[in-house]
Length: 265
Image (cartoon, rainbow, N blue to C red; front, side, top):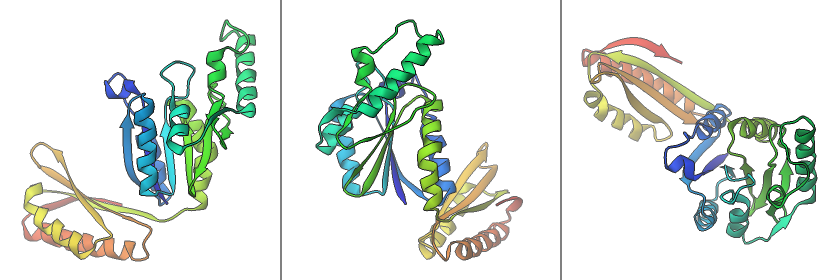
């Protein structure tokens, strides 16, 4: 599957909060052989979010995952913005309303919150794009959202990491496993020659094997050590071509008087 992420929050764009959610998500997407095509980070603005959703839909991924903007405050506007981007009404979802009401009731009884009952701010979290299915949030109060548009599955998740991860594990991870593809990544670390020295040979191999993504990573100082990593998604020839490319790259490193110091698999 091809997946796109939409990360929402002013706090990320001003550097107050570091976006660890997308890193956590893409690792799991790749693990099960799926490809993250793009990560988009935008602020808490209705027009920005709605237009971003429309742009992503135009690229026709199999799945869209959003993070952030589901809380009770004024700047939590993801559901409203997504509804606008999809051309749908924002409606009160009764299942979501009841789950939020129960969550706050438990929190009040446990002394976690001092205010009992539903307020307009709490009720706000139950408003979702028409046709949505609420996703239970066992770690917080704001439900996630699932909605389908033009055969594209959209999952709207909270931005709080433990809440996002819980919903992801319960809802999205089983889908990734069910539609599991193949993800290959191999490489090696070498020293003695720089990144720029080997660059033209990497380019030649990428042209020869277009399904491979071959990347060099400087590791210490000015290319004292360079790591080669080769990635391939869900192709029958992935492993064979990776092994061929690895063999050729190792040969090139030795011919250039470099030294292979570690094999990564």
